Length: 270
Length: 276
Image (cartoon, rainbow over all chains, first blue to last red; front, side, top):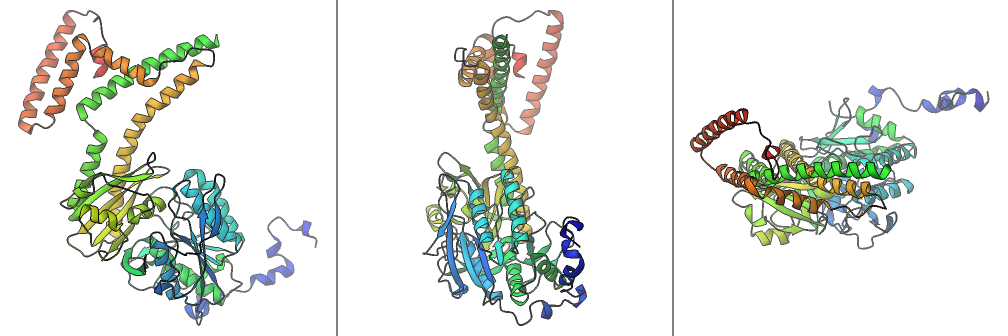
């Protein structure tokens, strides 16, 4: 059988290639022990595309291995090193602290897309995301989204690129109606907040677009200048799911974003 | 031919612009700054409903690249009026830049609200909810509610509720911006219609000035006086308003009878019926 005999997109389902499909057991066999039992996130790199991460914050526990920022230029924004590893708001550090608490061995990389320059805020965000995808980062936490209709196409392309490139995007849903990218795209893990005060509780919602609920009400989080605060919002629910996803990816390095999502759904609280 | 057509279209555009200018002027005189009034009523309703110490709306000003606190309500809210912050500062900045609604509590001890602003207003909140003001395709500002009296923190439900108020505010702002945009739209249309060979057309502001000056004369000036009186009467109590409505109703009937007796075209100035 030659390549030409196989209809487009059908190769994975044909002949010897089919054996590669048999890796995952039936859904009910997937429990938390199978999905991430014994995992601490080793070998997984998680990007936090946000306001920056304070390297020295106790909640980050020295897990920050890279700090970058998007620098606007006259043409496309570029990503440069941010050796000072600052957080201009505290929000990115909050996300990093949540992820580190769940997946302590995962390496964190900060991509700061917020800064003093307000030019093209959506394109800065996109530039940070492009960079994370190009680096082959395993899980990307996006506790922010863009409302720019002009960037719909670009974000759509990027989420596909991430999905096919084995990069899992975890995106906080926006709780204001209207467009919000990339959280509304089907290939991302979109997250809103639940109010059960437990980081290990999450829910799967079979009615999209928002498929997962993570802990996001009155969360004790790290904040700017080494401090802590109590925060509420979908922004803090997403990193809880990111942390679990990092554990799953560490235990199942060959699992694709789709499979990780399926395992998140299979192991959600009922 | 093409030039003739352009000129004719240009004349139509000018007439349209004059009509819009007249209506806008009447609206402005009768209603005052309507958008601001709506925003004020929204923050007042927000404070009442949340039983909060303060609520405020900051709008993004592109010219200065700042978020400016335009309206505020509540005992602790007034200090923030007129203050502007960089659009990446504190909670308001984050919510503006990312479009993500947030609530924080137990906050007085740190810098996350932009301590500089808190000190300027001499009020350090313990809890805050901030939601973006969003239009169809962008974030134009932030609604903040400070210190719910009945609880130590704001809930997810509070974020949802604040978002509803923020939507109202964004809609009100969009409406006034549309009014303003009509002028610039017509301006560019006039310029486009004039074509390269034609003399420079009058700008929108010149046309608007001329239109309003025109109605300032003769009997039309009395109409403006009436508009001013109506603007003041808006503050009257319900009983007085009833009286005004009765008087105006009688006048309207009288005018109707007069018109049917002598159907004569008016001369000079704009037709006041245009401005109703």
